[in-house]
Amino acid sequence: MNKLICGVAFAVALLAVGAANSQVYPARPMTVVVPYAAGGPTDVLARLFAERMRAFLGQPVLVENVVGAGGAAGLSRVVRATPDGYTVGIGNWGTHVGLGVIYRLDFDLFKDFEPVALLPNNPMLIVTRKDVAAKDLRELMAWLKANESKISVGTSGVGGASHVAGVFFQNMMGARFQFVPYRGAGPAMNDLVAGQIALMVDSLPNSIQHVRSGAIRAFAVTARARTALAPDIATVDEAGAPGLHMSIWNGFWVPRTTPKNVILRLNAAAVDAMSDPTVRDRMGALGFEIPSRGQQTPEALGELQRNEIEKWGPIIRAANIKAE
Image 1 (cartoon, rainbow, N blue to C red):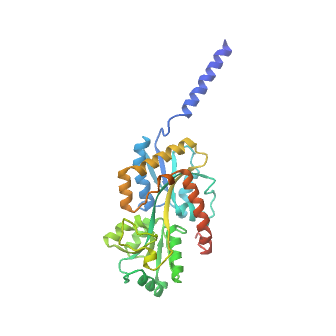
Image 2 (cartoon, rainbow, N blue to C red):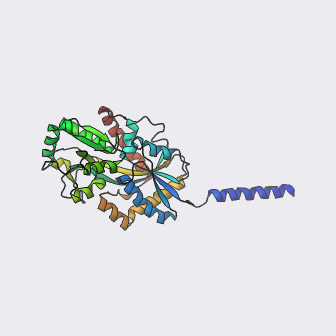
Image 3 (cartoon, rainbow, N blue to C red):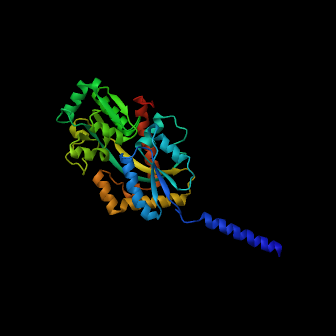
C-alpha cells in the first residue's frame, strides 16, 4: 500500500511539473531588445510591433534599448538571456550581416540565435544638410568630389548599412570622405539636421519626415523603383549612380534552444501585426515595405541572412571596413 501511495504521489508530482512546463506562453511580460538608440528606425519599428503584439499575446511587451559596439551589445544581451521567449531581439542588415564581418564577436550569428520572423524593410535615401548647393544627384556628386577633404558623412555605426552604402557611394565617385559613426541613426540624423555633418545614406523612415519639412535634402533612393511614399525622389539608376542598391531588412531573433512552440507563437504575433490594417498604414506612412506572407517565416529570415552575408561579406572585407 505504501508503495502504491508513493507511486501515485510521484505521478501527481510529474503531472504538476508537466502542467507548469506546458503553461500557456506568454505568462508574464516580455522584452524586445533594440540594439540601437531610441528614435532610430529600428526603435520605431520595435515599438510599432510591441504595441500590436501586446494585444495578440495578452501580455505587456517592453522595449529596451541596449546600445554599443555597432549593435553587438544588444545582441549580446539577447544571446545570454534565458531561451524561454521572454527576451526577443530585433535586428537588421547591420547587426546580422555587417556586424559579423567587422567585429570579432564572442557569439555566432547563426548558431547562437533562432530566427523568428522577417519584418518590414526599407530602401535608403542619399540625403544632405539643407544648404548644399546642388540641383540633382549629378551636381551633388561633383560638389562632393570637389570638396571631399571637407566632407563628413554620418553613419548609424561602423559597418552598418549606412556606412557600407556610403563607402560604395564614395568609391563610385572615386572620392574619399571622413565617416563619423554614431550610436544609431537617430543621433546621426540630429547632427545632419543641425548641419554638423554634410551627408548620410540613410534609411527612408529615419529621413523622410525631415525631407518633407525641408530640414534636409534628398537626392535619390537606393532602389530599382521609386518608393510610393516619395514618388518624386528619383532612383539611383535614374539620378546618376546606377547599381547603388541597398535595402535595410529587419527581423526578430531569440536565443538558441528556445522551444519551437514559443518561436511559432512569436512568429504568429509578428505576422498578425503585419496583417493589421492600422499597423500597415503606420508602417507605410514611414516608408517600411512589408514582406510577402511567404517571406514572414523563420526559415525565410534565416535563408535571407545567410544569402546576404555571402553577398556582402566579401565586399565589406574588400573595403577594409573594421571596428574602431
